Amino acid sequence: MQQFWTHSLSLWVSGGATVVSGVAVIVSLYGAVVAARNYRRVRDAITDTSLESRLKTVAASMARASELLVLVQTEIQARAAKAKQLAEEVERGEQLALLTQPQKDAVAAVLRAEVSAEGRRSIWWTVGISVLTFVFGSAVTVLVTLLVHPLH
Image 1 (tube, rainbow, N blue to C red):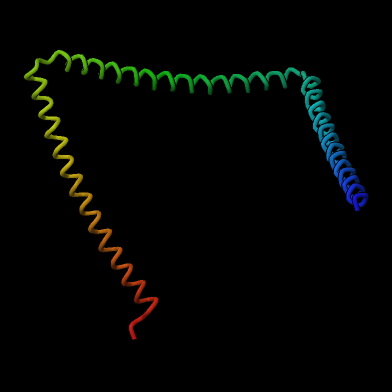
Image 2: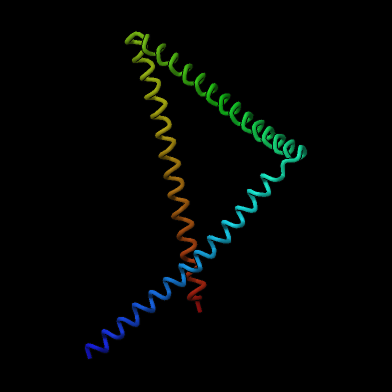
């Protein structure tokens, strides 16, 4: 019995080796095809050195450079706007730091009042949405119940 398992295992291992070697052959052939295709592409690019083709290449490069320049300019403008905004915020912060204690207390009171009013408004919105959700949920429950088990 032990010979049977040993023989079966050796057949399985040799079959696996055959599959692996077959896959290796296929991968090697695919690599050769890709390499040949790339070689032809490079060879054609090198041999095509007419003035016309070189001018087309230069024109394409200049167009791409122009696109990149526009992108860089846009990003520089965006960063400049952000820097200006941050400078204004720093200036506003410095002005707040120069306030006297009574002025700071007044600003804090105004902020507290505004936050409190916004909080009350937010609570009413939450209550309203909750009531609407409850009403619509109840209506859907009743409708589904009537559709599934209609009254006789």
